[in-house]
Image (cartoon, rainbow, N blue to C red):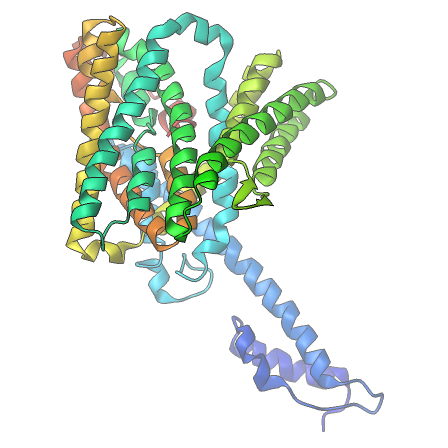
Length: 489
């Protein structure tokens, strides 16, 4: 028998050095029943020391995975810039490369993401969605809403609703033709996801070519309203899909749960926004105000995760997206220095958002695309959404007697999808296998739209006469504009 603690520490340390990433299931191999003269059971000592090592290696694995994901996304974005692709596309591709089907195949802990550990990074996605929604609230300043008038409001709401209807009809018809490939719940959720629009790639073209005109001026407010409508439509569609997916269709729950979620989310966000505006006045340091901003976004996301069952299938729940969007809306309209803090929050959240897009790419279940039918569903979704956006924007623009160029070309600039759509897709994963199909089709569509979106936008703005031949510039665009991935996606 070994004598003393040092001797046994050496033996255990030697074992750990042979296998530093040892798993919990190997604990049973070391359950030795050895007792020292002082009565201390050695089995307990081994288990305590073992847990310490597992905790340290797990922490290292998480940090290494996040570091590799962040570096991979950033370096790939430099390559994307060389070939004139948006940074969001680079982050999604980086996620695929460090995900379970490429780097993760090596099975080395801390090197990329595996199917087993990818879900453990959901907290990053939840926080990123909070920042995205908070930034969206900045687009609803009363001063700006008064300037855009009814035109952008009607266009934003109408084209979003038309797009949802077109996509829902196309995918529900697909469901009846192939019920074993696409469920009704998945079709409904995808119809809601289709509303979301991302102007990041469009803005890159606008800044690069100094585009100016009625289409450019209408674009931003329409996108802000579009995403707000999309979040409400998604909350309703997701609630209905949950009822269908569970197999227990409760009429009251189907009707009231989405309404309760919307009302509770908006009220909670409004309360937090007012409280945030009041609390910020007690701090004068920029760093402390920034810390307070992050704290309230975390508070909004955290409170939105709580659910209370009232019985009969009725529950009180809230959406982190709607809550944080209302938080940002109330704050930017009640705080005198909100614009500065909003801009600082956008810059501070960049690493979190890069990780969000990379993790979203890593979550793509590539194996599902070996099924040609699923790829076909993705193509149907892309075509239906594109038609809905184009004709929806055109019809609503004619209704408001907008400029003829807006009628003709605005819809094309609304095609890109990214952040908010990905956020909806991540939320849809709560539906299980049906949600996985929604997520995969959304990610597939985002990759396609982000690849072709900037080119179509340039062509549309050129034909609208808002890009002049001398408008192109080689001047370096500030980093926060060129690689902007917030807020509307």
